[in-house]
Image (spheres, helix red, strand yellow):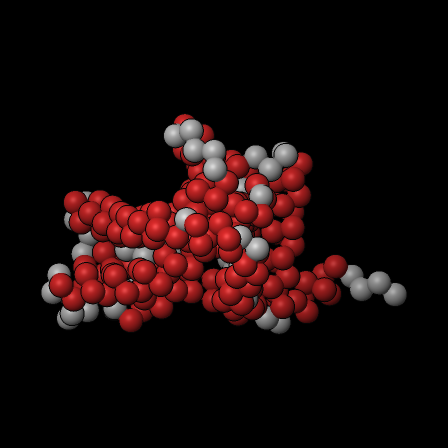
Length: 243
């Protein structure tokens, strides 16, 4: 006999599987919409999923921690997924060797601008030091960004929100910005997207081409490394060690 829908809901609501099930089903629905719209950037599935999940948790009055008890399994997989990006990058090794110098320059400039622009705008708006530390690694993939913030005394939860928001905005706007700048090279486009919009931007780049995705993954990893070294040094130089 097929179990009643209410029985399934009762079982899931008392289990960590609730958050995982809701996350997977919601993303699958969002991706279906995205695919039906011919992968239009404005219908990014991550953005649609976040909006739907927030609305669902609000309507059902479900505490975030209850949801995250199951959804954390997806969060855990971010690390292995990031490492796996080395596989398509290996196929682009010859091009990477030929372009290592301009890529290094782009990495240094992009990482510095991402930190300086975020901190500068927040500082001008009167943000306190804890907020400044939390917002600085916004262009770094979530696990690294939250680790940086936690070590420096910021708010990892605020960092996570900012990182996801940055990734969604970058994935949505990158095509229009790069087209306006008349940048056609797929490796350059991919590197720029990965540098500015980390994992979400990288996922979008892979939908364009494997070459763009490979260089986006490279930029995401290198930016995480650069920011984890550069930003703590800036914090120390700025005299924020009390954090």
